Length: 523
Image (tube, rainbow, N blue to C red; front, side, top):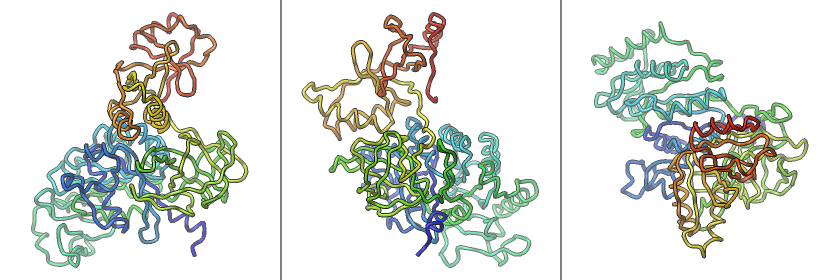
């Protein structure tokens, strides 16, 4: 039997971040394959065969081939217990991804070798930097023609402002991709060879020891020149800089052909951090603290449409979870017993009886939890730091198409809004429903799910982009301040919000009502 401390130190909890199409879902599947969690990786490309990616469970994702919800998958590999959080790749879901990144201890960034750093990768990377979490980089699709490796490293350093240390280096690429020179493990890993011939050992000078045809190729000579340059002028390997998120270890490979993935996984597990302390209102909480605690970073309705269930995803930050234990919800002070809890492999679930710091578990939720809630066992009762909320930029008016179906319309809106991807407002005067979101795709998913999961067709009318501002001194607000250019609404918590037509309307309002103090959520 392992001890509680050994269990916690064996945990590795990370999110995979990338631009859509960089190979994130494929990479997730290959990692699950190594963990023995799945036997058959249905690649995303093979959509027509009906074999969808294991981590994409929602119908709209299957239709579009994108991940729009963060799934969590767990598997054991050697002496480690791994929790992967698969984040939405689509930019319209940055808020969901942002919160997911609050629940991990490190991130794996996947970069398409042909495209380099793309907009969405940069945005998510900034979140990781802000939190100071270690970032490991996998440069994917080496089996296709892409940018030169040195150019990719330069881009990584210049665009992201982070130092890089290549753990391995490609020998050729595209049709002439021979494999990788593994700097860390001091060997060459060959592409598309029998398992017995996969690794070639190096001599003391760092060259392939045996006589091998690969040594005669221009690609090998070029790779050796690059490696000499990296050894002399590149960054030094620094465990401390990896831990603080200042240096990213870089791996080259191809997730689709499953090349370089195992080497990456084994090295990642060695250098990625175990669960880290978390900030709460009573100070830092150590993951080895015996008191159980955690926070809800995501709520997902109808993961199993047959059961109409709702799952709250909990990141355990300290202590040990045991099914049936009594926990207190810090926000309300109410204590309940947790009898239904689950762990995930995409849409396959199993009941979890025990879990420790670093694990992600699902709690069946009947409407008690909100995103950002802290739950603890025993005393003291405390609250982890707030999760960020984004200020929506796009808005639509929404109503039920069928007046007779108001009940299912209200239930659907209520549950989907609690997931945190869309925000709900009501106009102060007419009590019309307005939805706000960071991106257009959120509304499409909302409409699709209202019909599919709640049997409620909705009518949506775009009112375009608005500037939403909350009010510090609500008591000074007068009804007359609301106009067609500055609509006064209430958010779900009952707080007053102005939706301004544009920057000009916002400035005009501020000039006219200097005493009103406005603020926005994170943008």
